[in-house]
Every structure is written in structure tokens, then in C-alpha cells.
Length: 482
Image (cartoon, rainbow, N blue to C red; front, side, top):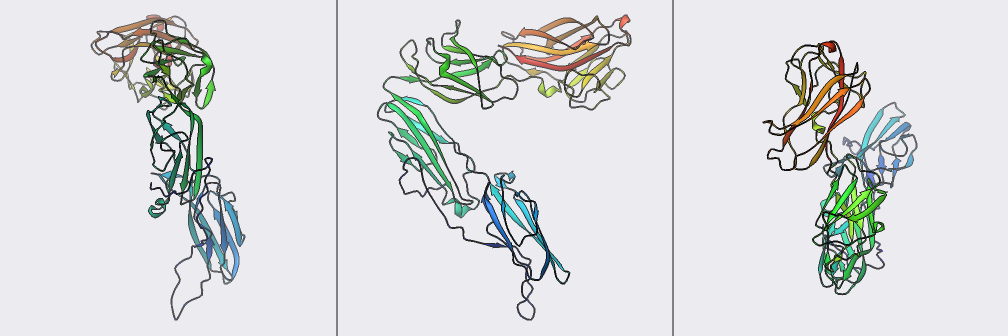
């Protein structure tokens, strides 16, 4: 994106205008025969390129009209028979590889002689610019260089020549330079203080402009500032570990903010870990769960035991590792329709995989979702063994394997396991099923294991008294819990 801003950026405000006095016609090709034939079908639009929330003025100047019908895809009005009408588009049209697919506006005119003419406009509706930026550090020693990254979205104009007029303008009060039109500038702050940063953006076609100001975004100090070196979500989403390269001292939990899916969650406490004094342990009242987005903010201001100042943290993304490690193994049997052995993620050792009288996905009795797996025992054989296909590598750590299960009668024994390919490491839980859905868990450690490949399987042992008994399995999960 090239920059053509020459005016001063004052109070973080800017005003840029371009002429839009155009009308766009959408008519069939005219016929030339014995001179120029008068055009009887003439719809026009004030523009066909706008930003969401804007309005297009349509006009039908066709001749000898007995009936007209406009159709406005994506507009605030679906249809109209008006000669002149203004339509507002509140939502951007669908994006395909960065380009709007566009909405279609159609006009159908019935003339007085009974003939019908019909044609369409394609209308591109762009998103508003979404301004955002970050810095490689939010606190630094005076004289240090700070790199800024433009993270804004929807900034590029539709056409290449219009992109020449697209503009960025940064303001860095107290910095050198104080302003910049680079996309990702670098700035030096020579004196201590708390400084705002602002970014203004102009898009030429369709026209839009946006401004973002972050107050006290940069802290410049005259002591060494250090930042965190690592972070991790731990203990099934209930804690965040934030580590530094220096021994930490006690802090106040009110200096920290944790956002989960853009909502602040309560923090019970923030402590220096007793067994790891370079790490803060941030305890959440409500644990994070699968697929949630987690960010951490810290206002800074604490000192390490060795005298360094802990710099502020702004919108630090925390990787959500609360993930069912068996999620690709069809753990709730939801990838299959009722009636047979699960087609995805599972196998067995007893040759009955394709026998729906033994193994069958059902939708009539389940713990959650739509399906569960029903296993019908006959009291003979070597056992009903179900296992996840393949072995998946895990990291060294602490894990919890969990299944939900029930049986048609009480007292059916079940063991389930985490197993390496060569059986060098086997962790087993032995349970007795009841007629109620119950969660059964197995906690195990892989710390120090040479082989970190694992799969899950369970065994229903033969039991003559169990002839005809049905066992139901659902919601198998494997989570890291440390």
C-alpha cells in the first residue's frame, strides 16, 4: 500500500474526501439499424461499489413502462416497483479470496407493447476497515527502538489504481519519528513516560476511513524492562502459567485481566509458584474449555527480585490446549449414522466390526449429542475389544482419559487403557458399570517415557451371565491436565 498523506495528523483526526458523482448504467446492448434506435430500457445506479451501511440510489428511466419490479439481494428492501428508490446495504457481501462476491440487483420491465426486458447489476459491498496494531514490546528502556505491526483488516481498495491512494498515518507523541506513513514503522522514545499511539487509515474504493487510538500504550522507563518468556494454559483450563527470566515477587491480581471469547473472567488469585519462582500462577474462577479464545493483559509495574521492571502485557494470546486429543477419532460417534460399526476412528480385534448385532452406532440412548455406541455381549469369546485406530504422539506430561458408559444391567466389568504400540507403557483402569450414564476416568503420566505414542482401547471381558447384555459407550476424551 502506497501512502500519499502530506497533511499533519492533529488530535488523531483526519478528513479525506474523493468525488463520487457517477451514475452506472446497466442496459442490454443497443441495436444499430438504419440509424440509432432509441433505448427503451435504462436502469442506472449511483454506484455499484460501497461500504457496508451505505446507500445506493437506483433509477429506472425506461420508456413506455407498464410495470416494473426491482429485486435487491442483500438490501434493506427486497423488492420494489418504484421508479426511483434508495437501498441501504447493512452487511458486506460474501468474501472469496479477499474479494467480495457481490450482491445482485435485478430490474424487470414490462413495456406497454407487452415486451419484457430484464437485466442485473452486481453490487460490491465492502466491510468497514477494522483498525488494529501491536508492538513488539509495550515497555522499554528509554532510547530503545520499538517495532509496530499494522494488523488492520479490509484496508485495500478494489482496483489497483485506487490502491495507490490508500493511506496509513501513524502518530507517536514523544517518539522519533512522531508520525509515519509506513505500514510497519519503527520508533525510538528518548524520554521516560507513558505514551499513546494512534493509527488512521483511508481506503479509496470503496471509500472508508478508520481511526484507532491506544492511550498509554507505550511505557518508557530508565530501568531495564523485561517481558515474559513463555505462557501456558494448565490444569484443564483453570490456570495460566506466565514465566520470566528472573525470580518474581508477589503481585496484585487486579493488575491482570483474562479475556475468554472477549469476555473478562474472574481471577481468583495470582501467586508466584512455590516450586518455580520465575512463574506466576494465575488461577481462573471458571476454567476455559474447548475452542475458546484466551488473551491476557497485565498492567506491569512489578519488579523482579533482581531489580528489573516487568513490562505491561497487551492482548497476549494464550494457546488453548484444552483440547480433546481424541477429537479426530470420532469420540462421540457423531460421524456415523445409526446402524453399524463406527466408520471413523475406531477398530477392534475380535472380527465383529461389521456385525451390527454386536457393535452398532445408535441414536436412542446416548450421553450427549446424537449418537452412542452399543455393544451387545453374548457371554462367550475372548472379549469385546474396541480401540482407536493408529497411535498418536503426545508430549511428556500428565493426562486424564475419560469415557462415559452404562450397561443394561449392573455389575458388568470394564477395563480401559492407554497403550504404546509395543506395550512398553500401559495404563489401565478397572471399573464396574451401572445402568446409569457415568463418567469413568484414568489419570496417567508420560513423563520419562521413551515411547510417547498412544492409543485408547477398552475391553469387555467374557461373562456367561452377561449373555444379551448391552453396554453403551459415549464421549471418549483424552486431556492434558498439568
